[in-house]
Image (tube, rainbow, N blue to C red; front, side, top):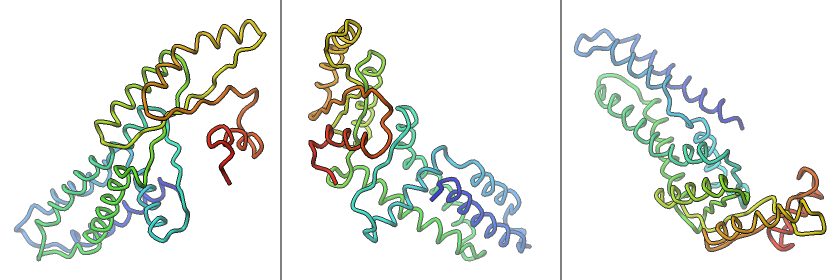
Length: 235
């Protein structure tokens, strides 16, 4: 499943239907070319993040048929993640604008395919919003590191999630350096402690992961991370 391909398929379906209808228009009652241009520009100027939202809408189809028990979305850093989470509201306005143009031609032109596509996507969008706001079905996990800038970003993220009413009760602190006989490691460990205390106070639940000596790749290393995260309760 490629999010860009899903968006391009949607655009093609809109454009084909709109061109078919407007090319057959001979009525002078409407500024047809202007409205067609507006519709085509609406399609070309899709809201940022719509491609990823399309992928999430597709996941909703999988959820409906019970294909998997859980779905994990690994979002990009803070700014991109927030934009993605705010996208449903922006896309909703995009859909509303489209609907208003379609209503202008109700009873005069057949835009049934476009209207049905919009109806389906609007329905999926509502389900996405309901899912994101339901703590029984969706959990947002914040991942950070014990450094000054990372703590500031984490606070900003948590505050924005609260304003968006998206449930977030768990923070994972990564790359903790254990205290040992190495002077450098002990210095870094001591420097991390004040930030770790700040992070632990941000949300009800906090999990800590150590700095692994190698990149976390492969089944064995991922199993070690899972043991730390879930206390061995994983399959």
